[in-house]
Length: 302
Image 1 (cartoon, helix red, strand yellow):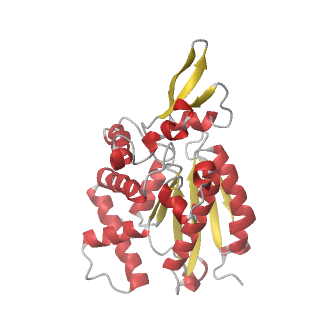
Image 2 (cartoon, rainbow, N blue to C red; image 1 turned 90 degrees about the vertical axis):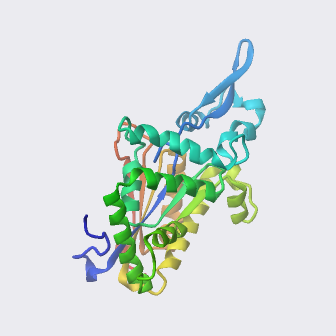
């Protein structure tokens, strides 16, 4: 078993380097089998045309001769809600299906699969920020299944050791927590945000921006997570350096988020080092990396 991934010695004042992560799910962590139900106009009329999330990301800006099923976006995305035929098991079932060929060693997952897995092993706090409309509890069930299936016994022990290291530093005592309680506490601290869900739109004050513009909703989700992580380390700010990574496979999301981080969040939080991973190019194994930081990422800002 490796040592816990907590302090990074040799840095300025040997401050703890806290790394947090935000991940899009579809085609970034996993290639999900979920289909978007569209119709395509042909000489004989409108015919069913189901596409993957990756295909939809390529065509959604120019939907010539293509429309949602029944000209109704709710029908098109019924598999991305908790109200379809499969109810709140839809996300979990599709996660199970997507993980099966990886579990058998036949596939490797999407570009950020290994990064997400390593972030979990290191006990890093993370947010899943997806344009899906599932409730946070549904997304969490998929994440829990990922951990059950993808972490070996030794990797799970490293995760628990890292969690105890963090808890001891920030909470002072972990002796009374069982392994199961410690893991549940960790999962409780992470965020699972379906930005087009009624739950998330309520978080945005009842706005329908999530459904109308997932890019705007993802910006709101990112700032929500930033505020969440800062709350977790309140009182320890002067002993930490902070990096926050975001990865997504949709070029439109990347463009909007990069502008948002540069023009707004990096000025509001100059002590945070933001890192963007654009995983839209299949020819780039780990994606295109963009770093945004001001003032040497010192905390607190002067």
